[in-house]
Image (cartoon, rainbow, N blue to C red; front, side):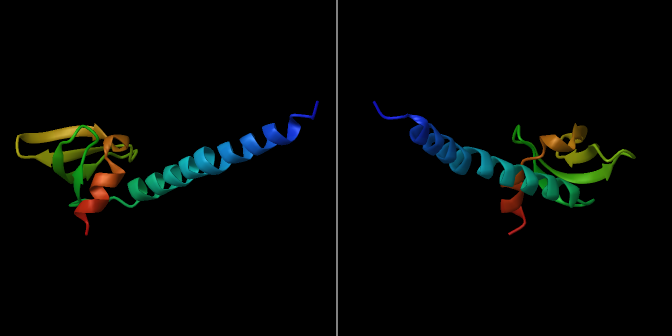
Length: 89
């Protein structure tokens, strides 16, 4: 009976290439995007709210957004990277 170590190694390599590395890239891209947000940017939240950034708090973790219904205070992590990128083009 052959050793199964090469098969396990190949499986771990495939897992790394197709799952771990793209997840890390997506995370770093999202961090860069959230860091570069500024007042006046049009955004869409992950829940689908379309808005414009009005102000950031002093710790820079939340922001106040203007919607057609009024102002909302949200966490910056609630801003959708994919949908916001589409607005800027």
